[in-house]
Image 1 (cartoon, rainbow, N blue to C red):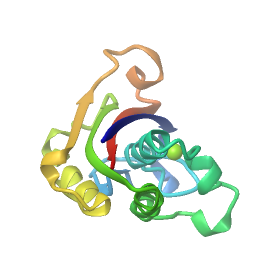
Image 2 (cartoon, helix red, strand yellow):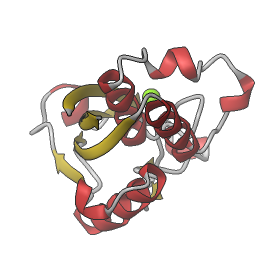
Image 3 (cartoon, rainbow, N blue to C red):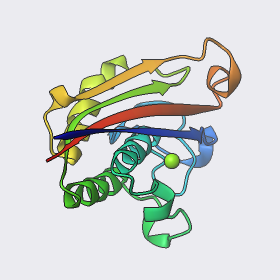
Length: 162
Ligand code: MG
């Protein structure tokens, strides 16, 4: 059996408060006065996990499979992209063992939504919630995260083959 690890990183800027965007992270709508800007639903957590999966499978990156110039992905539900990525890695004979992610944002607090995000992500990944970890941290006032301009996410996926 071989073990493979993939890294995913994504960031999205907050849209203006009057832009009518929902804040979606890990497939969950999180109450906030503004959402993230992007071609799809701008779910940076799910995007980072897609890239972690693709990375572990050495299958390129999210932009290659789901280009943000493609009208099919306009306002797309990123959990659909995640399901498609899962099908790609499973098609290579890989099984998802674990995903760990850290969301960096100044506010809102994500802790009340952590289990809902884990459940939504586990459902799309076809694994148990106990195999999904979602953590959050702030930028301590520094950089674009700290100034509240956007969200950054890092994710790691562990897959096995054989
Ligand atoms: Mg993205």
